[in-house]
Image (cartoon, rainbow, N blue to C red; front, side, top):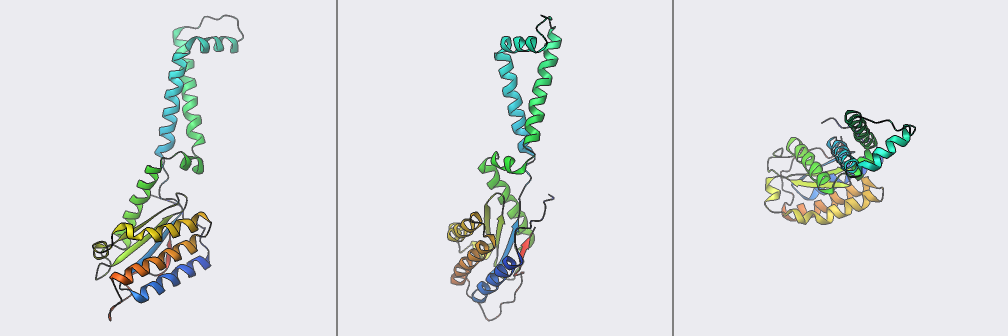
Length: 229
């Protein structure tokens, strides 16, 4: 899935997040990976779904109010009382429905409007799916103690995921990350994504330090830097 790289995180944001990860990992054997992307999915199926729904509603409307639309066609054609054949009416009907479909599809090419009309459950599922994919590639089973944890933020959906490797997941329930998620998304909505990620990382570090305190041998196995996709 080809998605464009974002440009909303400044050099200061990168430095802030990197420092937060390094600081958090001073007190835990857990390894935190941070990934930020502009959009988790292009939702190309959404315009087609909405366009098909609009076309179906238009078709049903034309059928239910057929006399009105036949009269409208006659008035638009000059009112000379031309007797259209059934084939001609069907052709006009198909063109009108096709225009509805294409018009809706073109309008929904604009990503902000497309996202606004995408069901919340769909966005949640797509963000989680991409987070899981990146977690498997970048954090899962990548440390000796299986103590990797991914913080994933998808900017345009205002959605985030925290996914933990086996050792962490066995001791830390998903809801424990709730405060970190709230702090992150509040800052993103306020236009401070870098601060949001850094704050979430700090809170994640507190949780990890409680369950996985730093040992005498604790190599830095995963990158501290913020990764933008």
